[in-house]
Amino acid sequence: MWKKDFLTAASAGREALSKKFKIVALIGQTGSGKSATANSICGQQEFKESYSTDSETDSVTALLATWQGVKGEEPVIAIDTPGLGDSKGRDTGHIA
Figure (cartoon, rainbow, N blue to C red):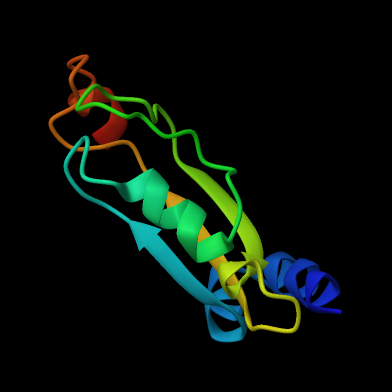
């Protein structure tokens, strides 16, 4: 049911979407665990993780899921972002 609510809210605009769903945007330094935290929030391994301080995430990615993947829990939108201090020197491009 909440997937239909998501489509309705998304078509109404960002404000309607943020009123209907909890949104968690993960922002921080490269290698600080943003993708791992997003996976934990969603209860699934959808965001690619790096097991070192090297940059893995190169674009903003979002997932609509239930809290920690538990059926019947509240839906949440987890947004994973590229890290600041990117090990490949892509900060300027990511910020733009």
